[in-house]
Image 1 (cartoon, rainbow, N blue to C red):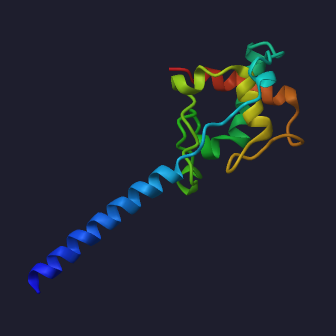
Image 2 (image 1 turned 180 degrees about the horizontal axis):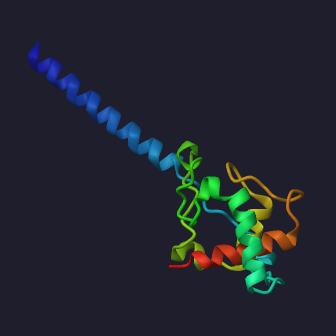
Length: 136
């Protein structure tokens, strides 16, 4: 009887571990595919003080609650999200083109809201310029 209980406990632990691993693998977000025409899209807004200041105000209003004030993905709403909002200071983000950032902000996906119709293209470009300042 004692051996049988030990066997059941070990079996239960194995099932829990496999379930957790399976959930983790399935819970990861899929790569965010951006159409080629957006990948090569050039930012028409100059990266000057005015653009960065405008982008900062918009970022604080629309993005900081999830992405954090400094783009580390640690905003107050981040803990309630299914997927990590991303670290804008790292190479994975900074190595993407401005066009990719524009596309993701404009059209969104899953928990990331789309800003098409809420913000002008110029405002989105200003935010892209501001988010570039998070680079490590």
